[in-house]
Image (tube, rainbow, N blue to C red; front, side, top):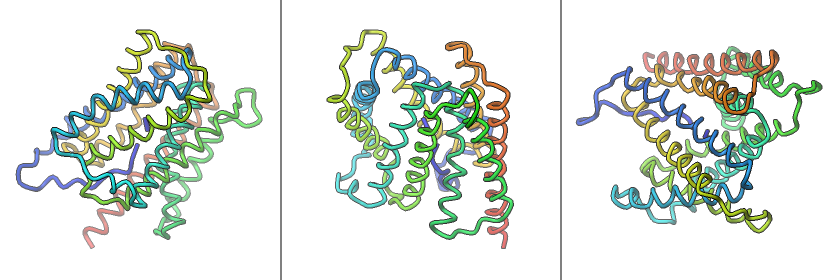
Length: 308
Protein backbone atom coordinates (compact mmCIF):
# COMPACT_ATOMS: atom_id res chain seq x y z
CA UNK A 1 0.00 0.00 0.00
CA UNK A 2 2.00 2.30 1.40
CA UNK A 3 6.21 3.34 1.25
CA UNK A 4 9.11 2.71 3.82
CA UNK A 5 12.40 4.64 4.28
CA UNK A 6 14.88 3.73 1.59
CA UNK A 7 17.47 1.24 2.89
CA UNK A 8 21.12 1.70 2.10
CA UNK A 9 21.83 -1.24 -0.16
CA UNK A 10 25.38 -2.44 -0.60
CA UNK A 11 25.77 -3.46 -4.23
CA UNK A 12 29.54 -3.80 -4.27
CA UNK A 13 29.94 -7.12 -2.51
CA UNK A 14 31.01 -10.18 -4.52
CA UNK A 15 28.18 -11.79 -6.42
CA UNK A 16 25.96 -8.71 -6.32
CA UNK A 17 23.90 -8.01 -9.40
CA UNK A 18 25.34 -5.19 -11.53
CA UNK A 19 23.57 -1.85 -11.43
CA UNK A 20 21.18 -1.10 -14.24
CA UNK A 21 19.10 2.02 -13.79
CA UNK A 22 16.77 1.08 -16.64
CA UNK A 23 15.81 -2.13 -14.87
CA UNK A 24 15.56 -0.27 -11.56
CA UNK A 25 13.25 2.41 -12.94
CA UNK A 26 11.05 -0.17 -14.66
CA UNK A 27 10.84 -2.24 -11.47
CA UNK A 28 9.87 0.77 -9.34
CA UNK A 29 7.24 1.88 -11.87
CA UNK A 30 5.92 -1.69 -11.95
CA UNK A 31 5.78 -1.79 -8.16
CA UNK A 32 3.62 1.33 -8.15
CA UNK A 33 1.24 -0.24 -10.68
CA UNK A 34 0.96 -3.29 -8.43
CA UNK A 35 0.30 -1.17 -5.35
CA UNK A 36 -2.46 0.88 -6.94
CA UNK A 37 -3.93 -2.28 -8.48
CA UNK A 38 -4.07 -3.86 -5.04
CA UNK A 39 -5.76 -0.79 -3.56
CA UNK A 40 -8.28 -0.55 -6.40
CA UNK A 41 -9.33 -4.20 -5.99
CA UNK A 42 -9.80 -3.74 -2.26
CA UNK A 43 -11.88 -0.61 -2.89
CA UNK A 44 -14.07 -2.55 -5.34
CA UNK A 45 -14.64 -5.39 -2.88
CA UNK A 46 -15.46 -2.90 -0.10
CA UNK A 47 -18.73 -2.22 -1.90
CA UNK A 48 -19.88 -5.67 -0.75
CA UNK A 49 -17.66 -6.73 2.19
CA UNK A 50 -16.80 -4.99 5.48
CA UNK A 51 -13.26 -3.91 6.37
CA UNK A 52 -12.46 -6.61 8.92
CA UNK A 53 -13.56 -9.39 6.59
CA UNK A 54 -11.47 -7.94 3.76
CA UNK A 55 -8.36 -7.75 5.95
CA UNK A 56 -8.94 -11.29 7.22
CA UNK A 57 -9.61 -12.95 3.85
CA UNK A 58 -6.86 -11.12 1.95
CA UNK A 59 -4.40 -11.68 4.78
CA UNK A 60 -5.20 -15.39 4.99
CA UNK A 61 -4.65 -15.79 1.26
CA UNK A 62 -1.32 -13.93 1.49
CA UNK A 63 -0.14 -16.04 4.43
CA UNK A 64 -0.91 -19.25 2.56
CA UNK A 65 1.37 -18.07 -0.23
CA UNK A 66 4.09 -16.71 2.07
CA UNK A 67 4.55 -19.63 4.48
CA UNK A 68 6.28 -21.93 1.93
CA UNK A 69 8.55 -19.07 0.80
CA UNK A 70 9.56 -18.20 4.38
CA UNK A 71 10.40 -21.83 5.11
CA UNK A 72 12.17 -22.68 1.85
CA UNK A 73 14.27 -19.50 1.85
CA UNK A 74 15.27 -19.93 5.50
CA UNK A 75 13.77 -16.59 6.46
CA UNK A 76 12.07 -17.77 9.66
CA UNK A 77 13.33 -16.33 12.95
CA UNK A 78 12.27 -16.97 16.57
CA UNK A 79 9.01 -15.25 17.46
CA UNK A 80 10.85 -13.63 20.38
CA UNK A 81 12.19 -11.12 17.84
CA UNK A 82 8.69 -9.64 17.67
CA UNK A 83 8.99 -8.63 21.34
CA UNK A 84 11.82 -6.19 20.58
CA UNK A 85 10.54 -2.62 21.16
CA UNK A 86 11.40 -1.45 17.63
CA UNK A 87 9.58 -4.42 16.06
CA UNK A 88 6.52 -3.86 18.25
CA UNK A 89 6.37 -0.16 17.37
CA UNK A 90 6.75 -1.01 13.70
CA UNK A 91 3.76 -3.33 13.90
CA UNK A 92 1.71 -0.73 15.80
CA UNK A 93 2.49 1.86 13.14
CA UNK A 94 1.80 -0.48 10.23
CA UNK A 95 -1.48 -1.80 11.63
CA UNK A 96 -2.67 1.73 12.42
CA UNK A 97 -1.75 2.92 8.94
CA UNK A 98 -3.57 0.04 7.26
CA UNK A 99 -6.79 0.35 9.23
CA UNK A 100 -7.14 4.12 8.77
CA UNK A 101 -5.91 4.08 5.17
CA UNK A 102 -8.50 1.53 4.11
CA UNK A 103 -11.25 3.19 6.14
CA UNK A 104 -10.60 6.36 4.13
CA UNK A 105 -10.06 4.54 0.84
CA UNK A 106 -13.55 3.02 1.03
CA UNK A 107 -15.13 6.48 1.22
CA UNK A 108 -12.89 8.87 -0.72
CA UNK A 109 -11.64 9.10 -4.31
CA UNK A 110 -8.65 6.87 -5.01
CA UNK A 111 -6.49 9.79 -6.19
CA UNK A 112 -7.22 11.95 -3.14
CA UNK A 113 -6.24 9.21 -0.69
CA UNK A 114 -3.03 8.43 -2.56
CA UNK A 115 -2.12 12.10 -2.82
CA UNK A 116 -2.52 12.59 0.92
CA UNK A 117 -0.51 9.48 1.72
CA UNK A 118 2.40 10.94 -0.28
CA UNK A 119 2.86 13.34 2.64
CA UNK A 120 4.10 10.42 4.79
CA UNK A 121 7.84 10.82 3.97
CA UNK A 122 7.60 14.53 4.80
CA UNK A 123 5.87 13.74 8.10
CA UNK A 124 8.59 11.19 8.89
CA UNK A 125 11.30 13.78 8.25
CA UNK A 126 9.53 16.24 10.55
CA UNK A 127 9.12 13.63 13.30
CA UNK A 128 12.77 12.57 13.11
CA UNK A 129 13.90 16.21 13.30
CA UNK A 130 11.76 16.82 16.39
CA UNK A 131 12.23 13.52 18.23
CA UNK A 132 15.87 12.77 17.40
CA UNK A 133 17.01 16.37 16.87
CA UNK A 134 18.45 15.53 13.47
CA UNK A 135 19.40 18.75 11.68
CA UNK A 136 16.90 19.89 9.06
CA UNK A 137 17.72 23.11 7.25
CA UNK A 138 15.32 25.87 6.33
CA UNK A 139 14.98 24.56 2.76
CA UNK A 140 13.52 21.25 3.86
CA UNK A 141 11.33 22.88 6.52
CA UNK A 142 10.05 25.25 3.82
CA UNK A 143 9.33 22.28 1.55
CA UNK A 144 7.45 20.61 4.42
CA UNK A 145 5.36 23.77 4.74
CA UNK A 146 4.56 23.65 1.03
CA UNK A 147 3.53 20.02 1.46
CA UNK A 148 1.20 20.97 4.31
CA UNK A 149 -0.42 23.61 2.10
CA UNK A 150 -0.91 20.91 -0.52
CA UNK A 151 -2.56 18.65 2.06
CA UNK A 152 -4.97 21.42 3.03
CA UNK A 153 -5.77 22.04 -0.64
CA UNK A 154 -6.61 18.36 -1.15
CA UNK A 155 -8.73 18.14 2.01
CA UNK A 156 -10.45 21.44 1.23
CA UNK A 157 -11.70 22.44 4.69
CA UNK A 158 -14.65 24.79 4.41
CA UNK A 159 -15.38 23.81 0.82
CA UNK A 160 -18.17 21.68 -0.61
CA UNK A 161 -15.72 18.86 -1.34
CA UNK A 162 -14.51 18.58 2.27
CA UNK A 163 -14.94 15.16 3.86
CA UNK A 164 -14.00 14.35 7.46
CA UNK A 165 -12.82 10.95 6.22
CA UNK A 166 -9.78 12.72 4.76
CA UNK A 167 -8.60 13.16 8.34
CA UNK A 168 -8.34 9.36 8.58
CA UNK A 169 -5.62 9.46 5.94
CA UNK A 170 -3.66 11.89 8.11
CA UNK A 171 -3.92 9.41 11.00
CA UNK A 172 -2.58 6.77 8.60
CA UNK A 173 0.30 9.13 7.79
CA UNK A 174 1.14 9.26 11.51
CA UNK A 175 1.11 5.46 11.57
CA UNK A 176 3.49 5.33 8.61
CA UNK A 177 5.84 7.78 10.33
CA UNK A 178 5.87 5.58 13.46
CA UNK A 179 6.52 2.50 11.33
CA UNK A 180 9.34 4.13 9.39
CA UNK A 181 11.06 5.53 12.46
CA UNK A 182 10.84 2.15 14.21
CA UNK A 183 12.25 0.45 11.11
CA UNK A 184 15.41 2.58 11.50
CA UNK A 185 15.99 1.01 14.92
CA UNK A 186 15.29 -2.62 14.00
CA UNK A 187 17.85 -5.41 13.83
CA UNK A 188 19.17 -5.19 10.26
CA UNK A 189 19.92 -8.92 10.20
CA UNK A 190 16.20 -9.75 10.13
CA UNK A 191 15.16 -10.91 6.63
CA UNK A 192 12.73 -8.62 4.85
CA UNK A 193 10.52 -11.63 4.02
CA UNK A 194 10.21 -12.49 7.72
CA UNK A 195 9.24 -8.89 8.58
CA UNK A 196 6.67 -8.90 5.76
CA UNK A 197 5.25 -12.22 6.99
CA UNK A 198 4.86 -11.05 10.58
CA UNK A 199 3.29 -7.82 9.34
CA UNK A 200 0.81 -9.73 7.18
CA UNK A 201 0.00 -11.97 10.16
CA UNK A 202 -0.63 -8.95 12.41
CA UNK A 203 -2.96 -7.34 9.86
CA UNK A 204 -4.83 -10.63 9.39
CA UNK A 205 -5.33 -10.88 13.17
CA UNK A 206 -6.57 -7.29 13.10
CA UNK A 207 -9.21 -8.41 10.61
CA UNK A 208 -10.17 -11.27 12.93
CA UNK A 209 -10.58 -8.80 15.81
CA UNK A 210 -13.01 -6.77 13.68
CA UNK A 211 -15.24 -9.73 12.79
CA UNK A 212 -17.41 -9.75 15.96
CA UNK A 213 -18.37 -6.12 15.30
CA UNK A 214 -19.34 -6.58 11.65
CA UNK A 215 -21.99 -8.42 9.71
CA UNK A 216 -20.24 -11.33 7.99
CA UNK A 217 -21.06 -11.61 4.31
CA UNK A 218 -19.86 -14.75 2.61
CA UNK A 219 -17.55 -13.67 -0.22
CA UNK A 220 -18.54 -14.88 -3.66
CA UNK A 221 -16.02 -16.23 -6.16
CA UNK A 222 -15.35 -12.81 -7.67
CA UNK A 223 -14.63 -11.37 -4.21
CA UNK A 224 -12.14 -14.13 -3.46
CA UNK A 225 -10.47 -13.66 -6.83
CA UNK A 226 -10.23 -9.91 -6.30
CA UNK A 227 -8.74 -10.28 -2.82
CA UNK A 228 -6.39 -13.02 -4.02
CA UNK A 229 -5.15 -10.81 -6.85
CA UNK A 230 -4.91 -7.87 -4.43
CA UNK A 231 -2.63 -9.89 -2.17
CA UNK A 232 -0.66 -11.10 -5.18
CA UNK A 233 -0.21 -7.53 -6.43
CA UNK A 234 0.97 -6.47 -2.97
CA UNK A 235 3.58 -9.24 -2.81
CA UNK A 236 4.62 -8.41 -6.37
CA UNK A 237 5.09 -4.77 -5.36
CA UNK A 238 7.35 -5.79 -2.47
CA UNK A 239 9.52 -7.95 -4.74
CA UNK A 240 9.73 -5.33 -7.49
CA UNK A 241 10.77 -2.68 -4.98
CA UNK A 242 13.61 -4.93 -3.82
CA UNK A 243 14.74 -5.31 -7.45
CA UNK A 244 14.48 -1.55 -7.99
CA UNK A 245 16.58 -0.68 -4.95
CA UNK A 246 19.21 -3.33 -5.66
CA UNK A 247 19.61 -2.82 -9.39
CA UNK A 248 19.19 0.96 -9.66
CA UNK A 249 20.61 3.98 -7.91
CA UNK A 250 18.26 5.15 -5.17
CA UNK A 251 18.39 8.75 -6.40
CA UNK A 252 17.29 7.58 -9.86
CA UNK A 253 14.59 5.04 -9.05
CA UNK A 254 12.90 6.61 -6.00
CA UNK A 255 11.18 9.48 -7.85
CA UNK A 256 9.29 6.83 -9.80
CA UNK A 257 7.27 6.22 -6.63
CA UNK A 258 5.21 9.23 -7.63
CA UNK A 259 4.00 7.44 -10.78
CA UNK A 260 1.49 5.83 -8.44
CA UNK A 261 -0.45 9.10 -8.51
CA UNK A 262 -0.81 8.91 -12.31
CA UNK A 263 -2.32 5.45 -12.09
CA UNK A 264 -4.54 6.46 -9.16
CA UNK A 265 -6.04 9.30 -11.20
CA UNK A 266 -6.45 7.10 -14.29
CA UNK A 267 -8.06 4.15 -12.46
CA UNK A 268 -10.24 6.45 -10.37
CA UNK A 269 -11.60 8.03 -13.54
CA UNK A 270 -12.04 4.81 -15.54
CA UNK A 271 -13.62 2.73 -12.76
CA UNK A 272 -15.49 5.24 -10.58
CA UNK A 273 -15.66 8.32 -12.82
CA UNK A 274 -13.68 10.34 -10.26
CA UNK A 275 -12.24 13.61 -11.58
CA UNK A 276 -10.04 15.65 -9.19
CA UNK A 277 -11.14 19.28 -8.86
CA UNK A 278 -8.79 22.23 -9.52
CA UNK A 279 -8.01 22.76 -5.83
CA UNK A 280 -7.23 19.08 -5.23
CA UNK A 281 -5.09 18.94 -8.38
CA UNK A 282 -3.14 21.95 -7.14
CA UNK A 283 -2.64 20.12 -3.84
CA UNK A 284 -1.39 17.01 -5.66
CA UNK A 285 1.30 19.07 -7.36
CA UNK A 286 2.41 20.77 -4.13
CA UNK A 287 2.68 17.53 -2.13
CA UNK A 288 4.64 15.72 -4.85
CA UNK A 289 6.93 18.71 -5.50
CA UNK A 290 7.66 19.03 -1.77
CA UNK A 291 8.39 15.33 -1.45
CA UNK A 292 10.72 15.32 -4.44
CA UNK A 293 12.57 18.42 -3.22
CA UNK A 294 13.14 16.94 0.25
CA UNK A 295 14.32 13.66 -1.23
CA UNK A 296 16.85 15.24 -3.58
CA UNK A 297 17.99 17.66 -0.88
CA UNK A 298 18.68 14.77 1.51
CA UNK A 299 20.60 12.90 -1.19
CA UNK A 300 22.69 16.00 -1.93
CA UNK A 301 23.53 16.39 1.78
CA UNK A 302 24.51 12.72 2.03
CA UNK A 303 26.88 13.08 -0.91
CA UNK A 304 28.41 16.23 0.61
CA UNK A 305 28.95 14.45 3.91
CA UNK A 306 30.54 11.48 2.14
CA UNK A 307 33.03 13.76 0.36
CA UNK A 308 33.94 15.60 3.57
